[in-house]
Length: 224
Image (cartoon, rainbow, N blue to C red; front, top):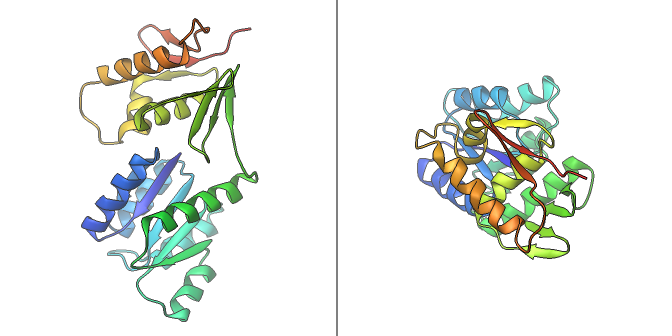
């Protein structure tokens, strides 16, 4: 799942990004309204964590503009205080929920999960390929009924491939969506993590699901 966090407090933004990444989310961070607008137009997000007070364009304006453009993406707005008028204004601008600073990280996670479930229209959205199932809400992967222990990066990589079943996914796309849109490290990291995933998903002699398309990338395909 991919999230956009919009927070001008660099320290808080970094903490949120790290915490959400450890919970198997792919996170983009914007520190002002213009950057948020750019990223929102560029990518498809499962949810947005949006601070109200931002440089260049505030959270209210961002939320109104995104809703006016027809975007249904769930938005969790962060308010600076308990003022009822601020919360009402946030909901009126199109936010789905609000959270008052300071807040507990576990509560933020719970509210995000609830918003994403509501947005998908189902309590436990799952992605499958043959006998492999990934449950984003429970952050659980099984194959043939057996739970697979995946790292956060392995989970995000598998989730991204499962979200594009049958497609040949270029390495560059995987780097952008699974690691970071600004990642400039060795692209061989994709091959390394594909190898890790194969070891775990093919354990016990199970059939291969992730196939290599030479010179391009990878394809997740459950062959009959």
